[in-house]
Length: 278
Image 1 (cartoon, rainbow, N blue to C red):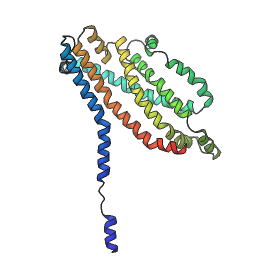
Image 2 (cartoon, helix red, strand yellow; image 1 turned 180 degrees about the vertical axis):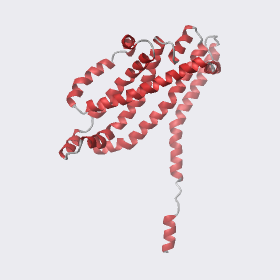
Image 3 (tube, rainbow, N blue to C red; image 1 turned 60 degrees about the vertical axis):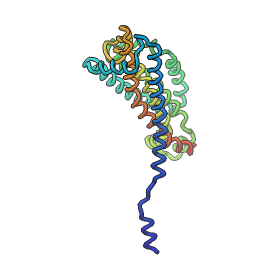
Image 4 (cartoon, rainbow, N blue to C red; image 1 turned 180 degrees about the horizontal axis):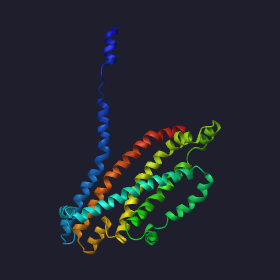
């Protein structure tokens, strides 16, 4: 009898329900965007056929022009240039914005003093301030990086400030009464509480960094995807315009999905813990 129980206890378990649940979760996550993308392409195709205009291309014509552009060394160099600046600006804005926001948010006085000023700056349309970047950084990669960094830094900073300021003060006071060291306080109380908000901020600011970069390239640049897009607009090459737009969407989609996955993981891992502490 004992040997039978031992064999039952040590027998491998098969989790078909978990696998099935994971499959359904992945399907719910990826299927709706895929369906929307397919419907958008179909609507685009039908509209192009119904309009029957020489300046409104079908998806096939746009993709053909994109393939032709990607075959050019100059176009590929511009795409790579934009990707490099985008990655650097996004990473820099995320790190600097998070660190400064975390530091400021721990001080109620400085939060009340500086946050309203930063909110006021954030309310100014970004493109209005771009001439300032040109004046100080000149026309080139540095001004494109600076404007992309600025477009993402301010929102990321504000998200980090608000998330840190919302940490339960009772936890901080208890840690102080227990004489918890400052590094341990940050590591075990503050960071777990703000990680879900920071992940959300990263997902939002990626698009802002990309938008800032494209605007900078369109207004004053001789390279980059924005420059290629504006050049096609000036030449009224609609198939190339739509092909470049498709390329921009293809470049933005994988990072957005990855950041959304990170946000979900951080929320499920630390959001519940924060709620229990609250």
